[in-house]
Structures are given as structure tokens and as C-alpha cells.
Amino acid sequence: MISFQSKIKEVYATPIGKDILDKLFLQMKLPEKLIDNPMIGNMKLSTVVKLSRGKLSEGFLRTFLNLVNAEKDVPAPGTCEVKPAWWKEAVFYQIYPRSFCDGNGDGMGDLEGVLSKLDYLKSIGVDAIWFSPIYDSPQDDNGYDIRDYRTIWERFGTMEKFDELLDAVHARGMRLIMDLVINHSSDEHEWFQKALTDPKSKYHDYYIFRPATGKGSDPGDPPNNWKSFFSGSAWNYYPEINEWGLHLFSSKQMDLNWENPELRADVIDMIRWWLEKGVDGFRMDVINLISKTDGLPDGDEMIGKMMGVRGIEHYFYGPRLHEYLRQIRSEAFDPYNAFSVGEMPGIGMESGKLLTGDDRHELDLFFNFDHLETPGHTRFDDYVYDLNYLKQYYIRWQEGFGNHCWQALFLENHDNPRVVSKIEPNPAFHEKLAMTLLTIQLTLKGTPFIYQGQEMGTANYPFRSIEEMDDVESINLYNELIEKHTPAEAFRIVLSGTRDHARRMIDWDPSDPGDSARYDHVRNYLQKLTTARKDHKTLVYGDILFTNRTRKDLFTYFRSDANENWYIECNLSNHDIRRSGTDLNPESIANCRVLGNYGNVRNGVLRAYECNVYWLT
Ligand code: ISL
Image 1 (cartoon, rainbow, N blue to C red):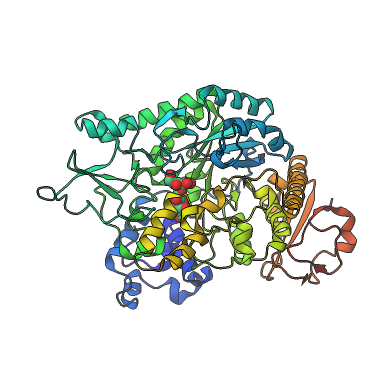
Image 2: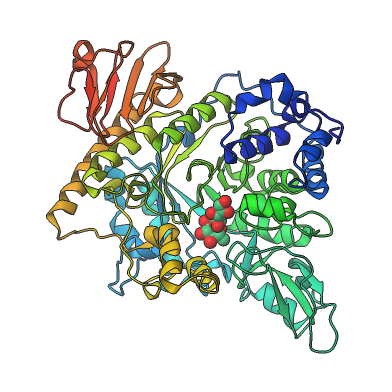
């Protein structure tokens, strides 16, 4: 048991303690090594509180201790052999259906459009497709608010079209995974509607309601101080039943009550229904949020500030999370051999091991987001991302995650701006940069997830006003910001981080010759990368050895096994850098180069964002 009297190094020896301290250190830009300093490691928590002079409250520490002590398990040592699996070898491609490809000419993407692009996806080496939600939905959050889990949204197509698509995917030897949004449903889902019209029905307990405490027509204060991820309180008041309902996301995305066994059984039934159809697995939306602390206590202000949303410590790693995941796994996934990747904001490496270790029977993979912004920044900051941080992040995870676990490698999705724009303000470099990033994604140890448009080096869209934006998160944030900022300032903040950058319709046939050339170059390059990865399992399962670990702007590593040895070198900057004396001399290995984003290798120098992949043996 960790208590106020425990030392920092004892806390760091627990999985949750380590994850939280690592996060704190990262945010404060302090090196992890600090724990090894006896002065720091031997300091008692009670002393830390005293030294903080009121900055760390006792409430903060109590919440922290509860989280640390609630986890009784420790991850198994990761020194075992990696177990092969199709999803470790696969290249995944995420489709955001509304903006991928328009098959019926109504200006919005649809299933017909996807069908027309399957041969293309196959040709660039995609093995598995992840579909963002295509279910019936009022589209308050572009489909992440589901009205009916067993129907396709009419603008995307019909269930017959879906079945045809699934067959067509399988016929090409590819796989399809669906988005599973089960932390919440739309308020237009029939369960929620029944909960409101008949509060005595069993569906009332499918959601998280709390009675209003006010008098007369005044509902009083919401049941706790939690904030929604999309601005404002996390509670809606429903006068018809005089109760508050919880929503961690938009006010139309109502959190489901996972405490209720009947709800769980219904969700599991629905999952099996899709698996029965033949889908190959699921990406599980914010799946780490499904279990909430008993009694829904108030969130700590300081943790709220640090993590970006108040209340999160009461649900990002909730008390019954492991139990629920195991139930889904054993009752739905295992009988169908289904694959799962959990989206898990806030989860660190050690808790990630407990959620995805192959000895744990919970999930196969998870998305961690710590690499998407450099320390001290949030998505809505206007700043230039330093790739040296990405290098250090990957070294840490690739060396620390262990062989029971497997990393999901992604740089973009539908919730983030385009990665080339984040890193490089000058579009002239985007083509080379896009190729280097794909090289990193496809040659590190893990499963690459490519987001639609990434294979063309797509950049952010130059939105001119808030009216051009569509996303509920951006619009809510803008409305919150204009209370304190001028409209121009508010727009500028939203522009930096808006999810709409990634949600613009893909332009399949660019009229601009520059765009068109970039599309071809990046795509052809990706096609060669995926081919190399398929032909050489060393690039999937081989050991990884990083060199030049502390050299700025140079990212180099070997992938090797008993049979093959590969060397990858990337320049992370937009200027020439010199190889150092210890690097492989490309002159001697130039004829081993399998891939690179410049026509030839140059001795001694790597040009802006140059990358090369060498097969040495
Ligand atoms: O909390 C975050 C980062 O720490 C967010 O980026 C969080 O991961 C994200 O908002 C959750 O995203 C998912 O669930 C949302 C939906 O709007 C997103 O599109 C989806 O990817 C609610 O369903």
C-alpha cells in the first residue's frame, strides 16, 4: 500500500504511480532519470506536499493514492518472444467515411465511394481498413453519436451495400474493423428515449442519471463538477424527469451505465451481431472511460488543469475497467477471434501493458496520444512540433513496452490536424517529410495505422472563418473562447487544433500540378514501403536497436533477426545534417539501399527530411 509516508521511488515502482509520475515529469520537462537521484527518490510524499507550498492539495494526493492503490496487478516482464499475429503484420488504413470518397455525387463520402477505392487501397499495400462510425446517427459528432447500432446511416448507404462492401474487402484478402462507440450513445437512441419517457423502465438504468436537488423549476447545481471534453458541464438537465444525465462528450452523447449487467449484455449482443456478419474486429472509442468511480465524486482542479478536463481521474482508469474489457473479450471477441484496438486517452505505458498484454485477455492494441503534442503544448496551441520529441518518445516505448505488448503506430487520425502542417510551416518540404514519417511508421516495431490522405502528404486546410468549420468540438470551443477573447483570437486558437483539418473531403484528382505530383510521389513511396514490410518479416518482428540516441535531428536504428539486418536513417530537420563518424558510411552500403526519398544517397550528408532504408544482409 502506498501512503503519505511512502517514498517517491516506492510510488514509481507501482504501474500507475510510474505512469502518473512520468506524465508529470514530461509536462514539467524534467528528465525521468530524476527518480534515480536519492534526494528525490527517497523523498516522502508528505514532504512533497509540504514543499509544494499549497500547490499540491491533500485532495490531489488522496486521489493519486487511490488510483495507485486500486491497481493490484503488475505487468509481466516483457522479455518473452513476440507471438505472431495477422494484426501485427498488417498495415491499417483509417477511413473517415463522410470525407473519403463520394460515390453518389451528393458531395459527401459514402459506402459506394469506398467500394470504388478498394483496389486502390489494395494497391498501396493496405491490409485492413478501420471505418469510423457508419451507423445511423443524428451526426451531432459525425457519427460518434449512435442512434441505432444495427443500421447504416442512410446518407452512407444501406446494410446491403455494407454486406457487399465487406465481401469485396474480404475478396481482396483485406480485413475490415468497425468503430465501436459504447461509452455513450446518442440521446436519440431508443434506450435513451425510453429512459426519458418511462423513467421506471429498465432503460433508465442504461444511462447515468442523478436527481436534481433544486426547488421548483430550478434544478440546482449539477451532481458534480465534471466538465465535458467538448466544453461546459458534463451534465444535462431533463425537466421531464427532474434529473441530470451525464455526458462526457457533446450534450447529445449520453454516457452508458456500464455498472448495469443488462446494458452490458445488450452491448455484447450487438457486438456479436456484427461479428456474426464477418467483420474482423473493432476500434473501440474512448473505451478506457467506461467505468466511473462509485459515487461520481468531484474532480480535482489541479488534475483537471493538467489533463485538460475536470473529473478525468474518476474515469480514465476506472475501478471496473479490466473486468468489463475481459467480459467483452470472452463473451464477444474470443468466440470470433476478433481483433481489438482501444482508443485510450490518458493511459500510459504501464497501465497500457495491463490493458493490452497478450497474457491479460483484454485488448490487443491501444492508441496512446502522448506523442501528438510536445510537452507543455495542447492541440490548440499554435506552435511548431519538434520531431526530436517524437524520436525520444519512440525510443522510450519501443524499448520499454516489452514483447507481451505491441505498439499501435499512428501520427494522424480524424481528431487531429495534419501532421506535416504541425511539423513544417513550409509546404515545399511536405512531400519529403510525409515520406519520412511514413518510413518511421512502417519500420518501427508495431502496427502502422495510416489516416486517409496521409498517403498523399495532405496538409491542413486554410479555413478563413468559423462558419467554414463543422465540428462540434471546434464550435463549442469557439463559443466558449469568445467570452474572453476577440472573435479573431478565438478563431486563431480553434484553427490551430480543429479536427476539421483532417475531415476535409479528399481531393482524388487535384487540378494543381504541384499537388498532383506530391500525391503520386508519396503514394508510390508508400507502396514500396508496404511491399518491403510484407516481403521482409524482419521489419515487423525483428529486434530494434537505436543508434545516435542523443544526436539532434538524426534518427537511426537497425531492425534485425537471425536472417536479416536493416538500417534506417532519417533527417528530422529541414536542413542538411552531417552523418557522424560512427554512422554507417552510405558509400559502402549505397547498393544496399532499398528505399529513400531522394534519388541517390550523398556521402556524409543527409538533406532536408531525407530518409533511407538499407537492407544490409
Ligand atoms: O482526450 C483527448 C486527448 O487526450 C481527446 O482527443 C479524445 O481522445 C477524443 O476526444 C476522443 O475521441 C473519440 O471520441 C469522441 C469523438 O468525438 C472522437 O471523434 C473520437 O475519436 C467521442 O465519441
